[in-house]
Image (cartoon, rainbow, N blue to C red; front, side, top):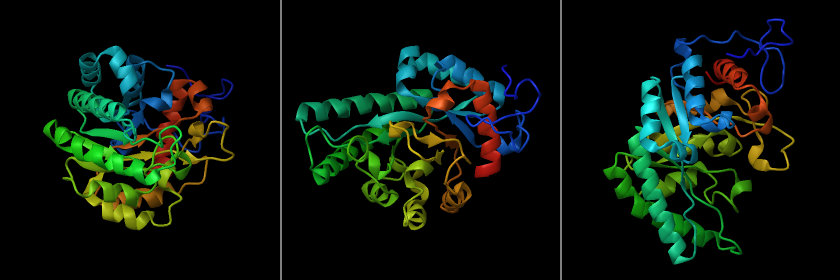
Length: 303
């Protein structure tokens, strides 16, 4: 295993800042890590076997998987790989992209999401993260886009329930409304989920997307048992040219993680806490150093 030490002096340093670590790295088996999950995107340059091995070696008990590398590896083989490593799958990302105006494209999206639901079930996770989609090219009809998402969720919910999978609607920061997610607040996501059984449609609380919302405490409380996933990463400024890569390591930015975790805990969520970071500097770092930093910052900033 590679070392995350500064200049060979035995001093643990954090990714991506290179700053000296403020706490010791929790060892594998540390009970404080029992709910920790590492989303595969946080170590984006690793293939699936390497990401699973990383979690196992570092004592991170859960992994959040992405469909593309899972499909490349084979769903059944991926399920066995994770199971044999003694890990659980916290979520599968991603379903969604349900806003197409063209009927043929809309039906294709429904079928793609049905495949994703079956994949989630085969992987042993009950959580399919839904990035619902932005505006179709050339469209300014935000109301219509949200209506199509609602229609798609209504069609997919019974299919998800049959497979023991929950559609986890992810509200996204408003800067992604045009191209990725027309649901921008927890309240919107809860409202869209409300007509359906709790076991079939839930919501994702991602700190990066919701920390700014002045109504978030009330909305998380109202979400209650619908909270299907809790994801953490920080908001750092200035944002990079590609805003998608603006997520930071917990503690490097502006988010009060403990306040949000307290809200989610108070709402009754007891599932995994998934670290999902899109950041070019984190991706370029040694994955073992990243995993060690994730463990330290999870303990020092989130718990």
